[in-house]
Length: 356
Image 1 (tube, rainbow, N blue to C red):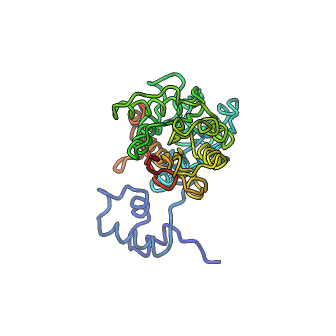
Image 2 (tube, rainbow, N blue to C red; image 1 turned 60 degrees about the vertical axis):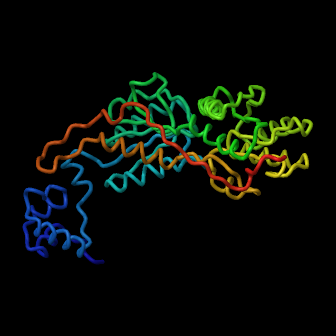
Image 3 (cartoon, helix red, strand yellow; image 1 turned 180 degrees about the horizontal axis):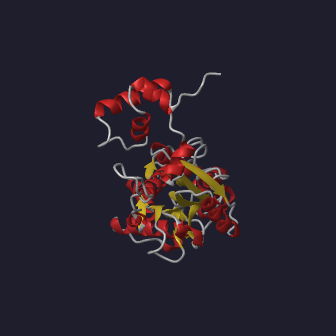
């Protein structure tokens, strides 16, 4: 088996000292090593496929370059893993790796998960949830730079900062597209009204109606669950009325609810979108785009939430100064407050003009 290249091999090929190789490849070349020598070192390292020993580097810098991610069930869930994917992509570009633990919605495991990651000397912590929700933040997250993704601190603002989808804007934007197609008889299959996402989207619906100068139809708010059967039941009830009273568009809590609504409409002999338009929420993979007709839906910016949260988190991780051996202090201010990320409306086949 071919011997793995060493720093001494790089030094010999580049015609420099071993200490010069260490300075350049560990990010301390500027101001210490001439630029032409730095380029020779990088070229030699590339030619020999040499990479600094990550363990040794972490011992010298007192950093592991590992970000701990705790999730309620994102890792084992089918949808919101995109948040972690977005976070991990940003981490890798900065030379970090992520280490994830899934508590499977067991709040008792939150504390132990955080402590386990701290015992591994992670540089920072992120908590990610499936669905927007309030979180009782484990106390251990105060011991390292920390941020929340898709959830918010139950203690209120001023504690652990967060990155969330802009659900108010999302609800308003979805309804703007529906109104632009001429729909005025509406039904809102909102999901549970105790859920933060449902509350915020409903606020967005009200905002869009006010913008259009239209009164908000309170009797058109139909609290539902999140599953296909919930959408089927709610839509069946909403559509089983005389044609001149029947809503021409349904705005659904999520894409699974919208699938149930489409099935209910077809069961009543109605065409989608000819007789009734149906709009989902989430843009769930392998559901929204493969449904017949394909669902028009408001896409949740899951990857963008993960990327934004990781970007803020890495900005707060202490780094080694380029021209000094001491660590730069962490900038905790970048972790303060709430950041809202807007999604995008995906117009497919289930939204059409209001029937005459």
